[in-house]
Length: 244
Image (cartoon, rainbow, N blue to C red; front, side):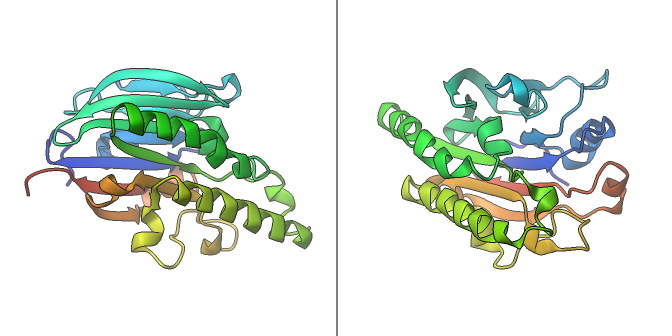
């Protein structure tokens, strides 16, 4: 079982809680993340006391970054970068600094907007790297506009695929590694509805190349108890950041 107090490990979770309050207890008690990118978040029940960094967009109040308050990582600062992008800067044992990017524009981007995302993020990444090179982490879930009509309008398929490729290629150009594809050739089972269509893997997980080298494993967390919360499986990435 993952120990969030272990200085040698960093666990990062990306999960859509589907607006179900029980997701918080499951996150804290079962997944035990150091950091989590949460979509579809609700108000936090009493008794859970995390650090929360909300998106830079008011419309994305249910999209946020979670950090375990008693883990070895420490929040140093946050900044809204514009275009709905929020960055949080943590200090972490063995890593030094860790920049985490989140915000509605990329955590749940309309498919028409993800073409622009990498271009918007590019100057921020350059600035961070030039001022103090650090590890970078970005994750979230695709929420394409018109998804409900996807099965009815086949003509939407090409623009969705093209936009997603532009998003991914843009991130690759500015030095991000797709750590899901590095370990899984086929899409992971993230959503368990839509006729079990795993080809619609809707989570992305990118890190800077140096942090990608610390990746131990990344998998969808499969547990039938999650079906009581929603139809999204959490994606869990474990990093070895020091020692054994």
